[in-house]
Image (cartoon, rainbow, N blue to C red; front, side, top):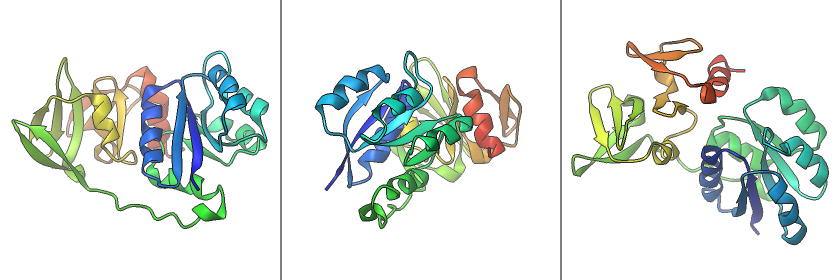
Length: 229
């Protein structure tokens, strides 16, 4: 039997990552996604749902307030970039609390807490590369050699240790193909391999003497990740 899941998050990127993770687990089925918490109330009244992946900071109605309304009616896994909400989240009997950005392994650990039938989920092997179409051919890019990705007007540049590839692909699509435990979007125009960061400040990260800007949108998430907090 599959768990019927919904996603509630106002960020498209966060929803896309969760959709990918859910799709990789055969025991889960995504039946709906929502941009704000208010839309969920009507849906839950008319549709059976087993599990809600719920962001906390959202406009109009926060995830915590929604959780108080639907408490004991459906299981909840909170997803947020702010650790300070964890205690209140667990007070609401949440299954788990995922601090963004979270890896697929961490996602699975949350699912395994649901019921005994999910305790033996086998983690699929993690790929160490992707193939990218560049110069009319498919080029293998090893994650260990990928430094950062630079988004330009209608194409992106993939900077590796040895080369730079010009690719006609969207940044939002590329980030979904990269392991979240190593790669993060830190600016609308940049995705970086966090394992290649040499130094960083609040304004930029340094990779191979290149100073890559950090935008306000991604700053808190990145700094929290880098500090290990």
